[in-house]
Length: 84
Image (tube, rainbow, N blue to C red; front, side):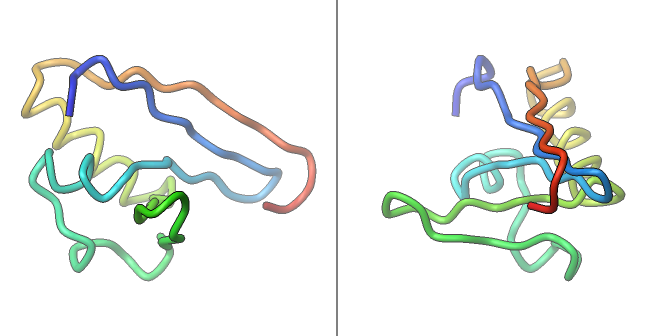
């Protein structure tokens, strides 16, 4: 993974999730088994996409990214006013 990746932070009025691919998750040293039950995975375009819940798993990913690349990842926010 390139450190130039930009991640999407999806939010609705009640929850938020950071979107990462399986490759991005593994690249920073994390495994799906380390995620809380509040994160989830969907298969899109032939790859597993993880949505890391905001309260724990997203912060763990950002910390692991910081450890690997020496800076926080670029994140864009995508908010909708209804439930995701």
